[in-house]
Length: 213
Image 1 (tube, one colour):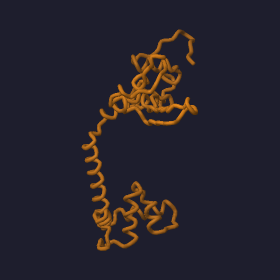
Image 2 (cartoon, rainbow, N blue to C red):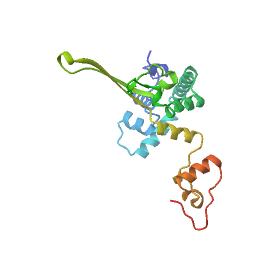
Image 3 (cartoon, rainbow, N blue to C red):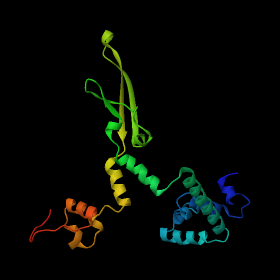
Image 4 (cartoon, rainbow, N blue to C red):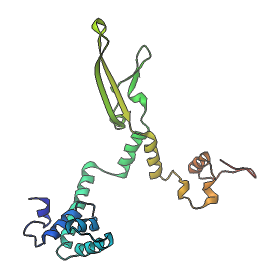
């Protein structure tokens, strides 16, 4: 039994072929009714008219219960995923923190000669969470008796700045000048002054006539 049959889109569903096609597209394209109507009915009408017709179909007595059932199934699937993977704000914060505060020292070591080499032997699960890519290259260096096997390992960490910025936004620690409407309060502050304001909650004091750039 296919997914379409599960929500009443099979041959015995009582829907016309175009209604069934509209329903199939609508449930798979992010609930874009106008697009689903245009494709299912091969309509050349304007987007506005397609949206009007789609709205009628969405409320149609034969389609509305099926849409509601599909949305209920989708919500249940999301809930199962959240439960299975323990999705939570706290876990998201922890994952971002691992990326933001990853340190190269967790993945490297120095040889007796002072050379820095890649070494994951001391990297725990938290440290490895920040690793996005590992590339291992094996090749022969030199020729004849001087030839030797070489393994080169390169790795890429998640972007620290992006992770830190996302954490700042989640905790409300970031002020975007473009989002602040009170020009006289924040727009003239320097970055250092903004950082100090976020940290202490106190506005900077200035001498008369002093400006910040």
